[in-house]
Image: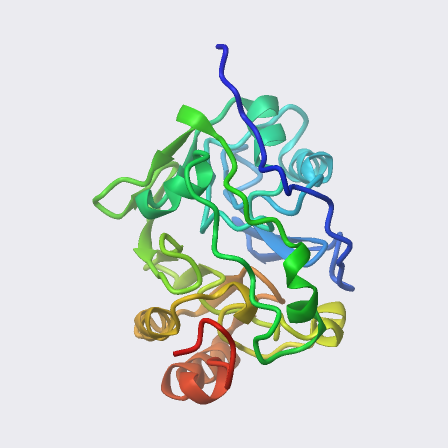
Length: 281
């Protein structure tokens, strides 16, 4: 095809992990969450049918692991109908090019995220000065250059539908990034939240390592619009999800999720918004 797919010049392996790395959780028969170092990928689809969609694409250099996890769950030589991205930060697109080349499948993201995925615009630099722990301090090493997926990435349909997932709809949840999206299935209350909120305080190395579970706002060091981020959390809380898989941390469900998300929506300024940092107004 003569196409050029490329990561940014600052693409590299990031030496960060958690105790959940390499483990998966079947939240529902057709909903599987797998942790790649410090970030979650989600497989949506019933293993019996062999038809599924992959949400997000893990950390840099994790393609072989992702492929083996999928073959273990769905069978050899199985491939997703599509790869759907919550957003384009390095830890959610880390293996995307190898996966595209291996499977030859389409990729979808919100139209406002496309400049970061088609070589046009770098993300704002991470903020190592933001209130938080060791992960914030090490954030300058995180890749922010745009990657180049060319015509392999397409905008999500404008009607809210999700390719390959007819029962889900996408919801624009900006703040952490301009085109961040979450995915919701009305019939059973499943929410794939990406980094709109997370289930571990991602700034603190100890909590990342141990995956100590507590609902938190989006990772501070890469969040640039806190007003939009709060509105996004309110939007998701109003859905009253029964299950939530976030980009970081363990899946949450039931009363713990309901109460935690309600508290976050009400007290986002106290819980999530840092007291200081270059993106704090």
